[in-house]
Amino acid sequence: MNSDLKKYFPIADFIAAISGNKTEVLIHDLSCLDKSIIYIVNGEVTNRTIGGTITKLAMELIHEGQTTNQPSTVNYLGTTNKGKNILRSSTYFIRDENGVAIGLLCVNTDITTLLKMRKAVDDLLIVDDKISKNSDVPTIIERFDGTVDEIIKETINSVIFEYGKGETSSEKFKLVEMLEKKGVFKFKGSVDIVAVALEVSIQSVYRYIKSIKGR
Image (cartoon, rainbow, N blue to C red; front, side, top):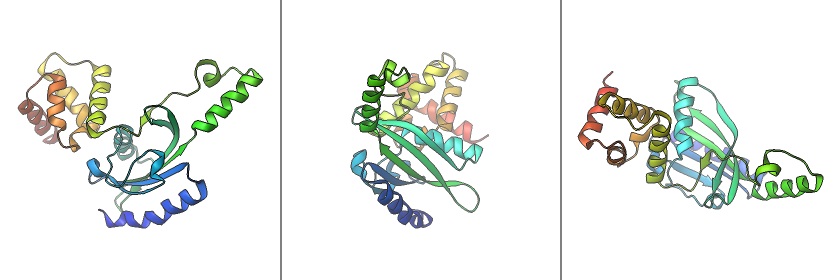
């Protein structure tokens, strides 16, 4: 564990104390994504504990935050309990003295009941908006109950959906490059999963990664 992250533990306690038990506050250590959760308050909100893994979106936020140096990303939506619970989430990038992100301070508030109350009021007022017109939940961009394998596969599928599966060696190299940028290969066992998904050998994936890092 990075000792610099410990000073954020009291801040997590403070945020949780003023926000109530429907708000989970946690800290990720980015040096070990498989077991990145090093501190958590009100973990019952997403049923996560210390030693839990990072999420797919958080991996993307890390890459985005490293390249843009943005201080935080706020008020995006996530889901847990197989989509039954909706969370409003915000992430603050914890950086070292060189500006490199070493951790994340994440705040996740369960707004499921509030959304249902909003829909009930909207129905009574006959208000047409994205929630009352189409659904009782908004668009979800993050899952909090995914396993490491599920996170890896979701990331692979999103890249394949955007760029295609790749027919040639150069196209598959490009896909591996995109997956490397999204942090997929920081997880143990990810190379095997990528090899199966792209229909190439494990050795080929390792060769692509070596070439990418050698640039």
